[in-house]
Amino acid sequence: GAVVSQHPSWVICKSGTSVKIECRSLDFQATTMFWYRQFPKQSLMLMATSNEGSKATYEQGVEKDKFLINHASLTLSTLTVTSAHPEDSSFYICSARALTYNEQFFGPGTRLTVL
Amino acid sequence: QKEVEQDPGPLSVPEGAIVSLNCTYSNSAFQYFMWYRQYSRKGPELLMYTYSSGNKEDGRFTAQVDKSSKYISLFIRDSQPSDSATYLCASRGYQKVTFGIGTKLQVIP
Image (tube, rainbow over all chains, first blue to last red; front, side):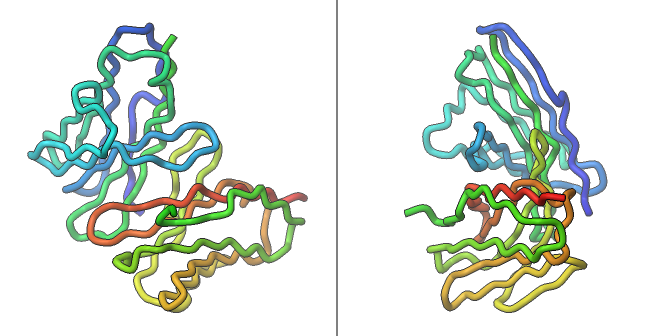
């Protein structure tokens, strides 16, 4: 199956700082990438969808100025959590889909802890 | 009403048992149906992907979709302790995938 990587796998930061998470599709070109957030014992919550070269589409209730998404190439998308606060602590997971696939493949996730 | 409903469990079975995991969905526009396995603190791993009603088998796993009743099932034969994980059902229309909350499965040796 297709491989999606994420970096870093975990990060701890101080409140008020910004954190960037990278998502890469390793063996296919991802025309669409998705960013999810998952709280303990809850399902995946879609934050935004991004198509390569276009602005991301954010789900209702997700602040686009706080969660900056860039999908500059067919293999890389980044999520930047700006001015992070403790309530932003969560498990962030990216997912990617190629134009020719119907399946969606997930990265291993990034655990963010904001102190 | 959630678009994809799934019993969160937990579900405990003895090793070797047949496991049945189920979901229902409400959106008639859903065309694609998936099952993902998620181990603790890891990203979901795609297990099964189906498009039409009927059964799809892959090793010990069988996915079943009944579009008339909007019912999705995953069967695991000869369950192993390594199958212990959370299983997420998911459905998709044109673009966005909607996930169930996940069923936590524990296979006891």
